[in-house]
Amino acid sequence: MTRSDQSIRKGRINMTFNQMIKLALVVVYSAVAIPVCAAEPIASFSKLSKEADIIFTPPAELEEIAVVPMPFFPFEKAYKHKKAKLEIRYAIRPLSRISIDFTDPHGLTPAPGTVFPLVLTALIGQFAQHADAPKHEYIPEQAKSLFNADWAAASQFKASPKAKSEYKYALLLAIHKDKRGDAYTMFLFDDPKAVKATINKIVNTMRFAS
Image (cartoon, rainbow, N blue to C red; front, side, top):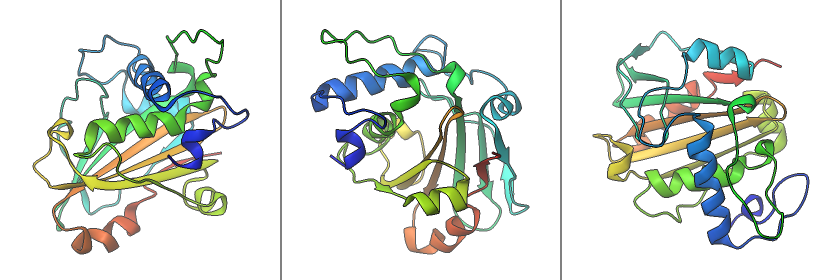
């Protein structure tokens, strides 16, 4: 586990790893504010962007495509690169839409705005062939300069069937802003080396405004 898995920001919570993953999955489901089996986006992308204070500026080299329905974590936007073999999916979770339906016998249930590292871990567990795929946190200065975020982390892994992708690999990026919410970008590709420069160029297509 990373430092973020062991400690929820603004207060350490003594929970087992299984408890944390269970909690994170609850958040993944409850954040969408719709039944777990639903696969449609929770609201328009523009509405969610406004609620979370997100700026989204897709580069000209991206072409919008239909969103692939995801049964447990809907993405609201999807694009493909016009030249590179690369697909990008975007999701926004405003803090106001995140709820936690989780009861801890010791009264340790955290606030909705503090569980973002656990949600990323849970999503990796769903999208990756190996649930223990490592994730790497940006240093605070990078998170701020690239995304105007208080926290950011990413994980690259071989995509599982649950990712519903024709590509072999995925890079999942999560960004968080206190009192605003979270946003997720999933890059899908076959050749990590071939798309590295392209991803670096468009990695902050979605960032917090303030």
